[in-house]
Each structure stands twice: as structure tokens, then as C-alpha cells.
Image (cartoon, rainbow, N blue to C red):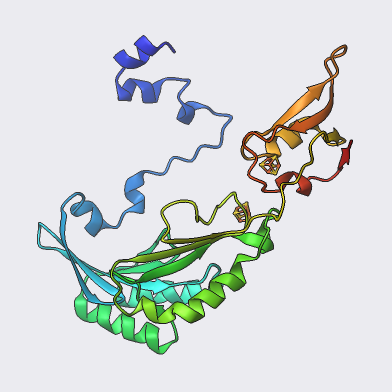
Amino acid sequence: MSLTWLESVSLEELRKHPLHPLNQPLKMWRYIPAKSWIPDICLRNYGKWRKRRYIDPGIVEVTSETGEKLYLVKVILPVRSSTATLYELCNLADQYGIGWIQASKMGNAIILCNDETKARELAKVLRDRGYLVGGWGPRLRNIKICSCFLTCTTAVIDAVPIEKSLGDALIDYTQKELPALLTIKVSACPNACGGGFDAADIGIVGYPASVPYMEGWRIKVLCPPRLLLDACPVGDITMIKDPKTGRPIGAEIRGMTCMACARITQIPNISKNS
Ligand code: SF4
Ligand code: SF4
């Protein structure tokens, strides 16, 4: 497909083209229209939400120019929740809300209601059952962390106890007003999947005590070379080839962009060789 052709063709024609990804029979594309992921009230008021009012640390009212209102009840969740917790929240969303829960970027569950009385009742029921309802407006949103030791091999620190300790110490700030909203993110290594280098007010990132290579060292490759190159998230590893045969004989850490994440030490069958 040339660029000129792409510029001249309509979206409808492009969608019917045999090379369009959705027309490739070998790939398991499952086309889900975006509208099926959006509640009716949000579709009706798309682009029309105008006003926002905090009526409780855990409830915000948003008003559309059409006059329709939504009440968003925020439940602050830890990084992992049991299926029992999720079922309970889903049942409450059906009982008091419009049957929708939005998962927020900070790891919270936001239950959508269309009636203020029901939203207040829901917040009370949740608090009575021990859930933390709050974090709207100028308050602590949550403490967001990466998946760390349990599911990731690269973790340098364990983020869960840090989240728990900080959460226990700062829980009151999910209810008390602060000068501005507060976000805290914890990542267990410099890959920072949980954030920490980005837009966080407080970021905690695990970092190895020293850079994992020494000058003049080479890594003797016993694993498939591609595996080693792909393991480095910043592409700092380069392959050393035999000048005669062109076959890979080792690898070198250039040190140009290395962020000392130690990810390559997780690959089996590599050894350092001076
Ligand atoms: S930040 Fe590091 S330890 Fe945490 S999930 Fe990402 S790669 Fe794994
Ligand atoms: S420690 Fe450095 S070279 Fe090794 S994988 Fe991480 S960024 Fe790449």
C-alpha cells in the first residue's frame, strides 16, 4: 500500500481491503465495538459532561449539559483483590448502581450510580463492610505499585510491604483535604511498571546497589542470542560476532543507556567470562 493510495482511500474502503488486519483469517482478531464498553448514560452524554461536585471524600457528582447526573463512588483497593471481593463489588454495583464498575489507573474501583441517595447508601454499606471509600478531590488517591516479586522476576525490592506500610501511615489522607491531590507510586525496579518516574507526587523505585557489569567483561552466551538482546528493555546489549564466520560468540553491555535493572541475570544459561 503506497502512502498516496492510503491518503486517497476512504476509511470504509480501507476496512474492506484484504490486507486490513481485521480481514486476515489466520489471526484471531476479535473485533469488539468500543460502544459495547461504554454505559448508555455515558454514550448519551459523550462530550457533554460540564460540572463536577465533591459531595463526600468518596463520592463525586458529575452533571451533563443535558441535566443527567452520575455519582461515582470510589473504592480504594490494594494491588491484589480476591475474586470474592470483586464479586461483592459487582453485586453492590448491580444493587445500588447502574451495573458498571470502572477500574481507575490508580487501581481503584469506581462504582457508577445515577441517584445520590443510592450512592450515599452504597458508600455507607461499603464503609460498614470495611472498604476504604475516599480519595476524590484534593486527597490521597491510592498507592499504586507494580506486580513485583510474586509475578515478576526482575524485582529488586518488594513493593507490597512498602505499599502496606505507607497505606497504614497515610490512610487518613484519603479522607482529609490536602492542598492538592496526592499520588504515590512504587515500582520494584527501574522498569517502573507501577510508575514512579512519571507523573507521581512521590515515586519510590527499587534500584540495584551497583551496575551489573565490570569494565572489560564480556558475557559468554549459552542461551539463544535473541533471548539476551530482547531481555534488555533499553537495548543496551550488543552481540559480538566472530569476524570470520559472522556467528555470534558473545555479548557486550555498552553501558550507554543501561539503567541497572539486572533483568539479564534472570535468563538461565548465561555466565560472565573475562
Ligand atoms: S517495575 Fe520491575 S519488578 Fe515491577 S513489574 Fe515492572 S519489571 Fe517487574
Ligand atoms: S542491567 Fe542494563 S544491560 Fe542489563 S538488561 Fe538492564 S538495562 Fe539492559
